[in-house]
Amino acid sequence: MLSKQSIDILIDLVEIKLSAILVQDKDDLREVNKLKHCRSELMDAKKTIGISRNRTNTERARNIV
Image 1 (cartoon, one colour):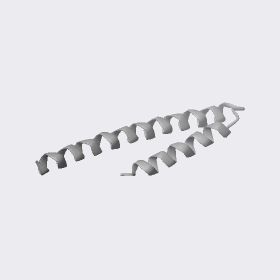
Image 2 (tube, helix red, strand yellow):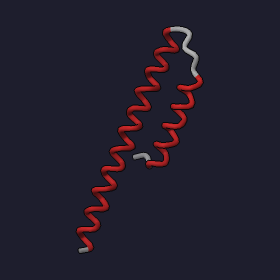
Image 3 (cartoon, one colour):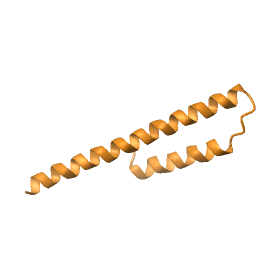
Image 4 (cartoon, one colour):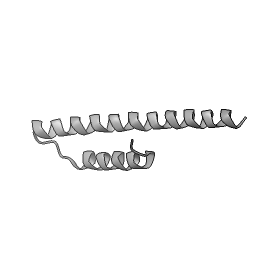
């Protein structure tokens, strides 16, 4: 699994590429759509990592008490 930092870097790279693309034809539009989908998947993965880390921390806290 990727770290949160790695996912943040990948999101930044995708957003940079999205901002640099000039849509001139259908292929460019397809590329934009793929990048947007990729960004969405990365954002979901980032949320999942946050949720799983919270669960892990909660489980650790229970074991301490």
